[in-house]
Image 1 (cartoon, helix red, strand yellow):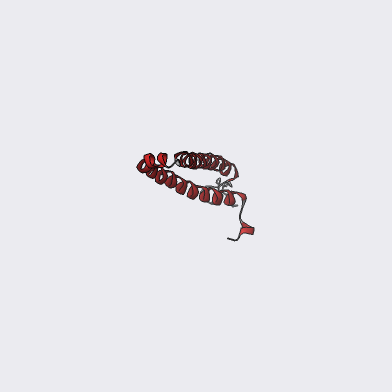
Image 2 (image 1 turned 90 degrees about the horizontal axis):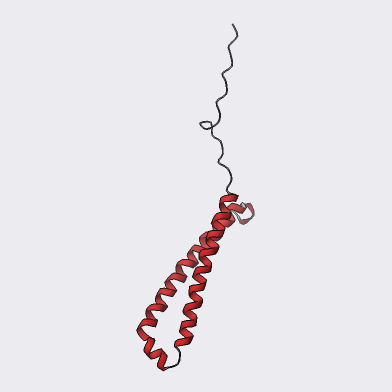
Length: 102
């Protein structure tokens, strides 16, 4: 399906998928940075770089939180944009049978 033919619902779902991927990498980055921080905290403090790393960790955590908030908001929007299910013959109301003429 081309970009021109996508519905708003499909666009929102595409953005949600991209944000979830970003969230995954942001979480991994926070975990990796935290692990490095724990290994080298003392050395970084001696080199006067501890506060710079703490700031990066805080910002990365804020990005992760913001991604979660936006994903939730867009998922709620997607619910309102979701088209109603199409009726199929099995779900369509039964039509009264026509009476045969004698």
